[in-house]
Amino acid sequence: MRDTAVLLMDCPDRKGLVARVSGLLYEWGANILHADQHQDHDLGLFFMRVEWALNGDNSGAEGSQRFDLAGFEKAFAPLAAELDMHWKLSASAQRPRVALFCSQYLHCMADLLHRWRSGELDCEIPVIVSNHREVENLAAFYGIPFEHVSVTAATRAEAEARQLALLAQHKVDLVVLARYMQILTPGFVARYPAAIINVHHSFLPAFTGARPYHAAHARGVKLIGATSHYVTEVLDDGPIIEQDVARISHRDQVEDLVARGRDLERLVLSRAVRWHLDRRILCYGNKTVVFD
Image (cartoon, rainbow, N blue to C red; front, side):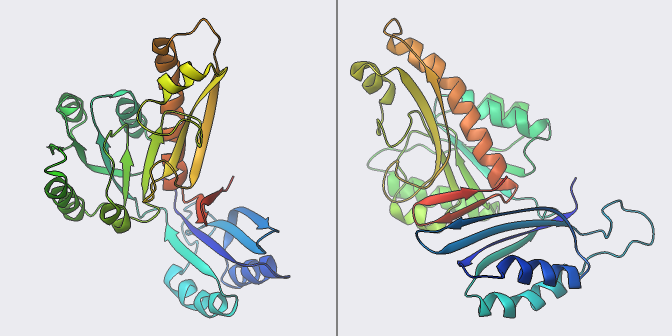
């Protein structure tokens, strides 16, 4: 397990920002492992991600001095205020707690659970929630509690209240919709800003809605895609995290598009979840910066 800290920040762009931040880290004895930055010249904004070792030289050798993260946080706050900065400081040892939601399609769920078990996704998964029971055996195989919450138009408010109670009970930090075929209400989304990741089976903003592969086939497109994005109040319109495409031809039928698309869905969702867990994403407006 990594023993590092990550600082994510954005602020109005100006000269000397990198020097100010890296200089303070140097004063505190930080061993910087990764640093990346981005400027949005049109909006005049600056974005930065810095990751550094918490155990001195990052080797864990006896006698190495551990980085004082709490002390640095107090020292950084005045600088952040001076620079009108939005910022978040976290330690890799604080493993996010992730709830997985799905309906009847299990390919994304199975892929995420395999990657989690193999150590690719550094998180805890305390609960799996579904409005169907197809995933129950898969949850049992991985030893994760399963909650069946049926959803209808008449019971949506009651169902969401139960789901939110489950998320609070399990202290969930991130919700992943692994082909969860229900629309979340604005009240639900507001409880987890930039902390609900969805996968949509098209290359957004093309072909929004419930049947994008059918729409793509009817339109005769030559590329199909999949998109992972943060969920907002507007359906399929949240900040895009990752996308991928596959080439198709006139010979492909809807069933072929669905089969090809499943691989894309697995890839873009797992990448988005991993980057979120690694604290590599910053949202601004309706866009994201995904740091290397």
